[in-house]
Length: 120
Image (cartoon, rainbow, N blue to C red; front, side, top):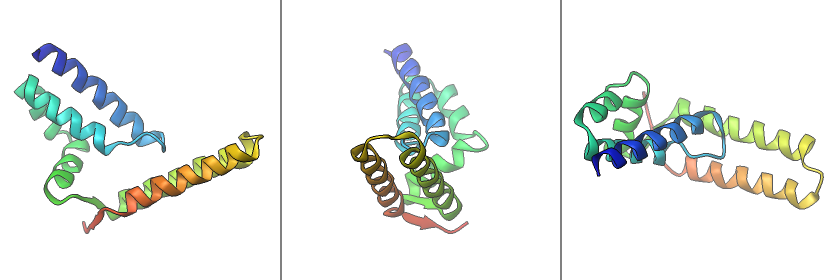
């Protein structure tokens, strides 16, 4: 089971990192899942993730304070809107697809903004 948890943790980590760059893919849930799976599979992997220069503090802050830093909120919401508005205007041909892109952007923005803001 430890190997399965380690594999799933690595897969979840890859999806979480991809979520940093892909606005519709959530980052936080995948990183939290990775931490949990690594904790169950390998202390070495868990310690590596939690001491990672960029991901470790992000996971710790969210676990302890259920908050997202203001800079992360601004960047996330901005990227969501830039990407999905571009898609709605220049890529989508059907009106319902344009409405769907804008609805997704609104939903993701509301989800991100509903968390407390962590003052750095």
